[in-house]
Amino acid sequence: MRKLCVIGDPIGHSLSPVIQNAMIQAAGLDYVYDARRVTGEDTACWLKQAVAEGYVGFNATMPHKENLVALADELSEDAALFRSVNTVRLKDGRVYGHNTDGAGFIRALREADMDPAGKTVLVLGAGGAAKAVVYKLVEAGAAHVTVANRTVKRAGGLCSQIGAKGLTACGFSRETLCRHASTSQLVVNCTSLGMTGARGQFEDLSFLEELNPGAGVFDLIYNPAQTPLLAKAQGLGHKVANGLGMLIWQALFALEIFTETKLDGAVMAAAARQALEAVV
Ligand code: NAP
Image (cartoon, rainbow, N blue to C red; front, side):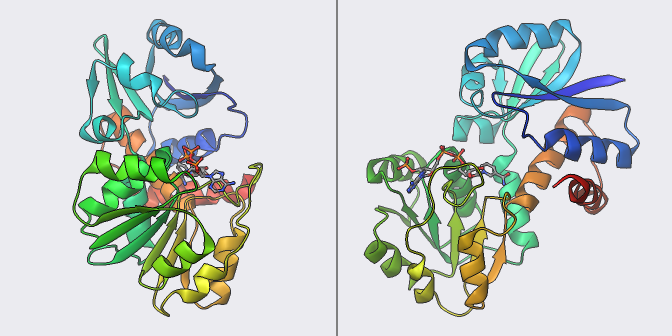
């Protein structure tokens, strides 16, 4: 059996082994996927160990995504753009760094019937996940994207780095969020607010009341399945989706990279969802 894993610190909470092993089984592949705790100082050591132990590849979560950018021999276009690697393929002594978060996000967004083409989008947050999200929204033809972040400088930096037309950075006050919500057709939460185990919560969700009736709300968080943001948006009659679809699709695209096989997305996603139901 060929070996795959996810590395991170902490790693005990990771759902990747459940998702990946369910998809591996559904596809009849001869692989096994486990989780390894690797600290942030040990990314380079781990790479040598992974080669020595015969790993075909691995996924990476906090705190390795940025470290792996400099350690890869080659980067995919998305990994180079996001300056972040979540999928590593080890082949013929070389390290190939990929990032499937952005592709997973856009696939899940479309699956939730929230295609961003031509839309005005309000993105909340400007961290690592937001970078992948904003790049993909621009690539998918969003007409305008406003990045609202507690640290405005970080939102400005993200917009300058992407350097596309129709990007605006702003702060996170109630007034600012209300103003931008009133002109947005889609809101994407890329902050950790509302996540189980995270410190903060949205202090005020009244900005959602400014949204137009047809607007959608997508939250990258999947634990809990319904964040207070999604509960409020749904209560106001908006289409909503959590981050589970993104998690599953980024995993599927990673598995395709590891195995160099095109997989049946619908079958894989169904297998992953069924396996997750048993554990979450
Ligand atoms: P990150 O780089 O640490 O960014 C966190 C973001 O949250 C920053 O914009 C930060 O603002 C903001 N934030 C944190 N506490 C806040 C508070 N009290 N008030 C206002 N803003 C606050 O994290 P990340 O990697 O981008 O992840 C963000 C979220 O996306 C997490 O919940 C993660 O689980 C989720 N995610 C989901 C998937 C998926 O597959 N579904 C994939 C990736 C990430 P500042 O810049 O001001 O600190």
